[in-house]
Length: 278
Image (cartoon, rainbow, N blue to C red):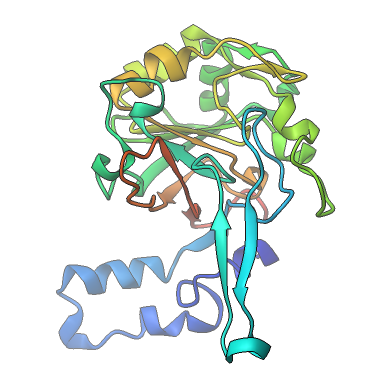
């Protein structure tokens, strides 16, 4: 198991806390929450979110977060920060209202919209898509066939472009790094294919999912404007380390309940029984 899974920051599902999920009293076995705890104890966890920090890579239209100390241990015997950031920072979800004036804002999105949903991962990285390139339906269908799955209603479709290879390896002023200024996207037929399948969300390892971008120039975005958000299909962007997880598993994330929010940062966990990195 890789360190990204061992140190996912959710003590209890893997690693040292494993036993508190599987050591369940006999009297609890019939309870649904006990069965869930036991099942979770058998799964591996991949943390698919980056660290939120000053200077982190951002999509072309957003500034990086600002993290300002309010007081320190030396001053007050405790420590706290003020954080200022765009809703669409790091791994995040787009609410329908982001592109649809009649769509739901973040506080109205169902709290379980991204909670333990089945995911299906389309690995497009062998195609090595270029910035500005729009990947089509045929490529998605071929990737699904190679992985042995078909989309079902309620799934979360994950699109792996292999784009996190462009994420800067050193912290610093990376706000306008290549990763957020250039990326491939999806053509209209690909977006329609996933919408017609009845997916709950479409997620990607790029900063803008279906949008294609070259040197900060934003191109087509058929998912944002037509096939996803206006139909209530959420968009999740900025996933990390997708090569480390198998093609199917469970997707777990909770957005913040932001009044009037167009989106929210997420901590995305991909739960699986092993495969891709073994």
